[in-house]
Length: 418
Image 1 (cartoon, one colour):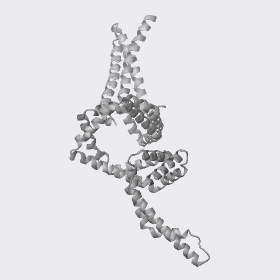
Image 2: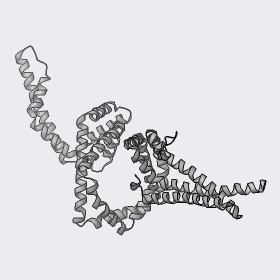
Image 3: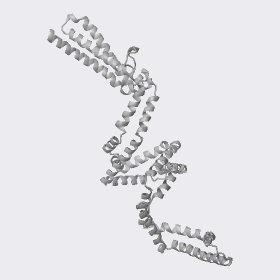
């Protein structure tokens, strides 16, 4: 056990024990020559009280971890007996003291990581060195097995976040943004062209569906004429519809675009007015589908693989300096915009606080399980290696303070009783 303790702890322990032994020798010496000089009674009082203080603190320190002298004295070997309770207490202390959302926000605000990072990266040389350092460690950090784990966690996080997003509001924002885009018609035109081709290719099916809608008549001749007329009309309508779609795909000033955009605006207004129940139901069905989680996991994993491959090729292709310049200029712009920098700091603090608030109980359970999995001797060794040196200094201080108290008491006794 002792061999595994750190050298500093062993050194301080020897000093504390040696000091106690020295006080014992000094006491014996002072007691032997007590009647042969004025100072020896003072030396005896100092050494006697120092031994008491040193022994008391030795007992207290030892009792934390084991039975003093191997004797099963009550309330000793506290760590060994209370290992489970210590694990619970440590886990609760760490969570409530360090992982609360309020404390995380406070520490984040005082540290200001975005500001420090932007100030560091504003210099191109530092940006290049930082980027190279990151790129060299990405392959080891994101090993294939780790990418699968990250992909699973990322997919779960995306699905959880999607469940909290109001679908109607999201679609409304997307539609409004699309309608404001100057290139919206260039995105619609390929869809119209493909739709026109599909209608032309399925002309017979469309005509058959149209003929089914005509009511059968009692006279066969009239029924035949009715179906023939419907087929002719349907055929012309299909051809007309197909040609209009093809024409619209070639001319972005075609009136059909106005009708499509008007329909999209009406849809956005309906959703904004509270008509998104069907979209919410559709979102729930998609989110709950096991295939959705699997697909998300595959997408995230492919993105991670692509990221690793791109990071490895970046320096080989000679584009590292260019990316460093981009990173440095972005940092400079961020430094020149204090409001944006403050907004990023606040957003980062909120995200981290939300993360710790959500997963804080899991961290507490992890700490508790980890401490519980240690053997008692292992736990004692870990604690002693961390705080044992300070505990041994308590023994040293107790010995010296005890001796000083002995001198004080001896002086008071002489003053009172002579």
